[in-house]
Length: 131
Image 1 (cartoon, rainbow, N blue to C red):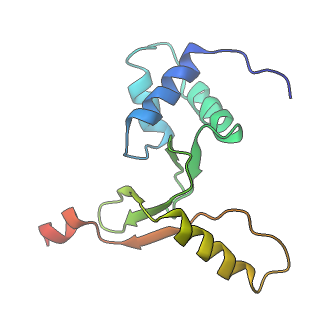
Image 2 (tube, one colour; image 1 turned 90 degrees about the vertical axis):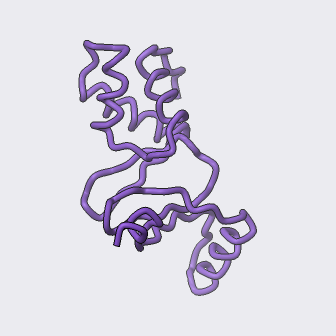
Image 3 (cartoon, rainbow, N blue to C red; image 1 turned 180 degrees about the vertical axis):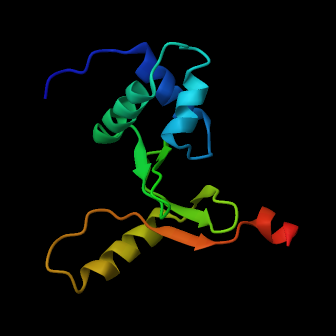
């Protein structure tokens, strides 16, 4: 693969992803990066998010509503989606637990599982307090 040319816009997108725990959509990333790069297009943000995902510097998290969310934390971890407010949160499990889930899933699978991504659903603590 050819070397990827440096881009200030890509660096700004990557920095924003690293600075938030909110798992933003591409539109949200666009709105934040546009503050520093007023001429950036939404298409440029999408292309760079996809590139960062492809090269392993971001994670794309598909959600049931069809909107992808992005995460700058590339260390293997799972996520929780609140079915009331739509927040997507990191769900911290130790690596041993994730490896055990992969091992169990692989017991009845004719192949090798090297990683996994699980999306848990329920209500976040903020929504529980509101009800």
